[in-house]
Length: 371
Image (tube, rainbow, N blue to C red; front, side, top):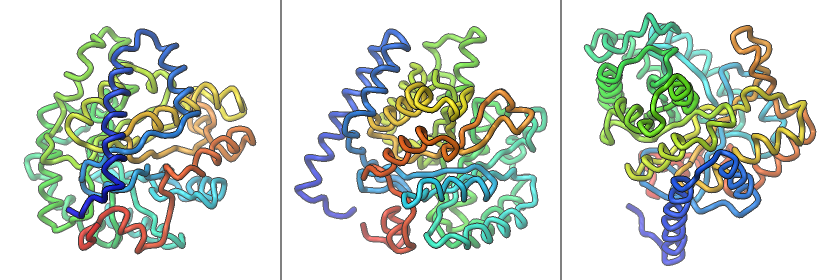
């Protein structure tokens, strides 16, 4: 571990105190209206210093990694142009372990090569072939999918850069079909395989869906048992590098389950990545009204949560897709008011945007770096 300067010590102490205050406030919340107002208010204040946990690819600096996607190169390029010069460092994409993995990485390599800065892939890895009835995490745990894991390792190595992998992302989503015991075993097997391949700069993210939890609660599940439900899927600190949360509808921002998840991540000393986020059910045509309803509380959550160290925004027109036709249009570049607010937010020193290779590798404390 590098030496901590006398200047850094007060900052770290402030971050720890701030973390305790925020979690106490969240646990004391009695209504979503109050929580929403607190998040909007937090957006107008200086962001709290980030906590440093010392995990893989976690910046020591008090910054939040900026990411966007998802999947298609055109939307990432449009978003990057809209927020320039504060372009995203992380790029989201997806692969199922049963897909053509060599072809996926060949395409990803070509796309990444087009950007002047070092873009870091944030890969969502699914284990169900896109169908809850076809989930095969048990076969992964049993070693039956090792040839595919070998291809995954070879593909990651070909990228020649750090990578975040959300293993079996949205593990609690009914649409994925995973069960706790087999999911845990699969996660551990994948983690062990990747480490055995010598890939030291791959951070494994345990990714939870806040929306799926709210669906469960609406279906009759006890809100007080939310932490028991997600921790039933937890592989353990030895196998996980980051915790991840996906946030879509506004209710996910101020739910008790989300507050508890952030609190538990802090207890486990794990940095948190917002792995996916978008203002579900809204469109940017709403302008200032949407800024108040979603963007301001969203960034307020980031501001007031010292453990959040990365966020990834989905800049999509969801209404183009039949399965998401009622999700709205989240393309920030299509509304001046939304874009102005968003660009002003990203201009803050809180965010780590795309950088040259040497600077990025140092920031992420990759293998061979001394910071």
